[in-house]
Image 1 (cartoon, rainbow, N blue to C red):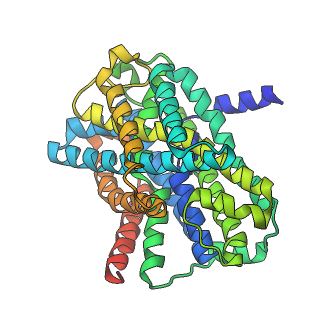
Image 2 (image 1 turned 45 degrees about the horizontal axis):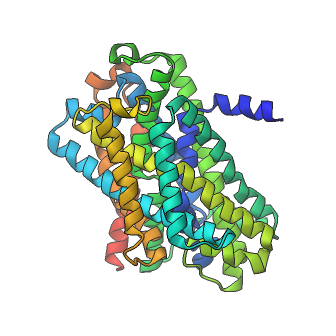
Length: 416
């Protein structure tokens, strides 16, 4: 059995890890809050965003495969410093807040299992993620990331441990419900922001480069260009990664809608969802929910810090890459450490947990259209992409994503 699992995991690439990291504790908190507050009413957002997610992540991966660089590295060469630094600044701010929310969720969740003070668990997870990312070689580190994606299956198990009316679920999956009220619209922005998050764009492209380097293509000349077979394999990887991400997100929302919403319980945080499930769905579901929060936190925090560091390092021309040792890329690893530590510190300023979780997703929702517009400029630039420029369908879905997210933001402001 273990042999088959290892063989299966070895075939998974950056697309799968990126998709799994999308269901981080901040995302879990957002899906849980949506389910507990509005039941199944916002479930339609997830199948709607699936093709948009695939097109965006495929585009980011394709840019990396063709150029041999991450997104920030391409922006630095072909676009103005104002565009580059604006994109990087927005990304680093959004990621740091996201890291803070995830550290807080992990620490509070672990406290549910082992009643040791919050500060201990927050420090423990901060140190653990820094050690993993800074001191373990990428070829080994990526294996741990793949294994951690399996923790997300706990949400599937939790859903099947309770009674759910699946006819109602499928109805809400494909028939949109829109309520023109501030809270509902704000949460729609949050759901878009947590499923189509800016850090995923940068991690996808940078991890594609890391994979090529791990295969021995260490120079830019060796990485430049992509074969049809490489593009095909990448698209399959991204496709299944995005499906995996949205299926898990749907199960989280379904579980909380079928239990907490039905019992009139509106949760405050992701870990509150785990605690509230115990008297309704039993300790097994509660334990699985808690385990999933911790597993996804360990998966996502290094990716959040890493994507910020890739963008920052590439924009200033530093040596970047998890394949490098610490002494070879001190600036790159310093950004990872600083972003994670600042995320830890934010937890001690007394911010309301649910607000930090939800506002993290909302900030991502506001930032994503701006960054996507810059990425679309790259994907349609023949000097960068050659014959692999965006096709009409990619542009259609990409601009649809930008338009829908911008419209959701505008409606939220109107009905504020």
